[in-house]
Length: 164
Image (cartoon, rainbow, N blue to C red; front, side, top):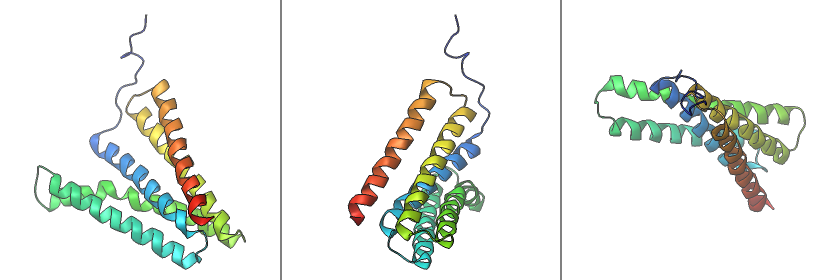
């Protein structure tokens, strides 16, 4: 009989890697949530609002983790800046998706909706990939993927409720 522990792969990610994965997921959620109300905005407004929102969340995230850290000093602040950087890069992925669609002639509402769907797919990949790197297999992965789709579905429904 296989024990539950033997079904798990060894942990192949350290604390800093786990923080980067979390920050990427958080950045995707923030950027997708920001896209909700921007369906009738210009490309410039979308860029500014998404980037400023993610930068503010990034700064508050780094601030909160830095003041909550048991160690004090610039070394630890730089650590939090480094591991939280995926919050910003995640926003770039969604912005590039939306801007590419706008350049191809898509309506802003459709482009932002596809951007949110892109965020859903990426969030599921990041979440499931992060759990796999932590050695988790089986039903927990399915539940995380389903939960991700559920959260994204709520965001997309909110977008329609806000704009229609």
